[in-house]
Image (cartoon, rainbow, N blue to C red; front, side, top):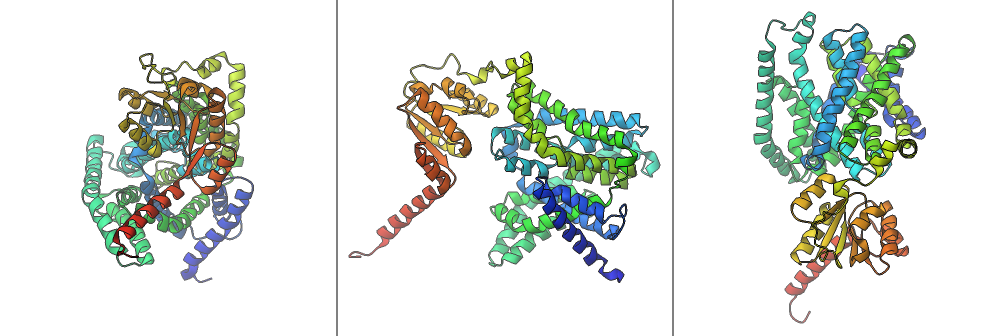
Length: 568
């Protein structure tokens, strides 16, 4: 076949085989990502048969990295991170440190130098955002407190990895002088110049980019052309990524990440994310396929004990570190197990860092293969790890006195302060969930001078509410002890403003058992859920879409009625 169609051949073979193997992986209840990596292995040089053009695949992977990081930036939320910062920030740092040290320890034992050990350890320390989000969505816990903690934890890890990707090229000469870096230049000068370039780029993006790109999107939107809007979004991502590398020496990954961040500031951010998603997904698949092409399956045969050590660090080592931190912050055992399971895998950032380490001659090729093997195995078994959460919790509580003490409600935030006015708790409203909807309800109750108690599983939120003088209890209201602490037995009304529909029935049953006369108000996402809840006599159910339509209809009728001529 002529060489000039190798691009088409590589894309066709990569996407076609990724579709087949990804579909098979999904049918086996494995993440489709496993199928994409296997597709890359199948068309890579390490396996017999057709071999795709690895150089072209590498360039496609670079585009995939840019668009992956652009997507991370588009979904990066300071608010989400700040909501769980007290657990996510120290937790992610401690867990990454433990995993990095474990990886460095085994790599040093194998005889690797400092640079190789550091890159190897860091690659094992960060979990895959793609795998995590898919796993939490599949279990319907993405919007739960456990899900928010896990996502916030991953945001901190992603930011740390972005920083590592920026600094690693500057430190390559110090970590491995034989790689041809400027070993004679002092590390402080190297870091200083690198951080200065990054600071200039970040400042330019935050000051100029966050104004220019929303303005540009608005101008393109006014044309009414959907394809121009999509083209503008993708062009902005790639142009900023390339320009940041060419002008500031910043990595493609960081440039694309900040392009996503500044576009998130635009009112068109949701449309930008939606319209660019198919292209981002396609190139993300090609990225994973290209990573698979670099994997040598013989590492499973030649180095089985090393592969086992890598999987042990990923699935056991860093998960235990995460569990210890979560329990140290006095979160429930279920939260600790959920966060641990969420982090028991590695993915896209590990591949990006490993590829960078190899290109800088810091990481040996076998190190990249070991990281790939660890990723494949940990991603494949991650659904199984998640399925063990509840059995593990029951077993631990049943066999450990210390675990039973942890499960006991000795958390000061799980009880109302003794200083709470008991008269205030007479005929009060119990408000479960203090997110966007719950907060507005709470503000309305405060404005009307009506007493209420908040029940939410976000400890930091409960601390802030108590500091403002609002009675609040920390915990999941599915647990009867939480509603008991909120004095549900004396309450006038229970308002369930949480999006977790599956938990509503248990809350309603507890409330009715303790207070048969209580009035219950429930938030629902759609008409089907609302009909089901009303059929089960869950109380008055409000559907978001219906209430929005009703409010808009009332406004339209008022305006039309006011403007209608007399006699009509």
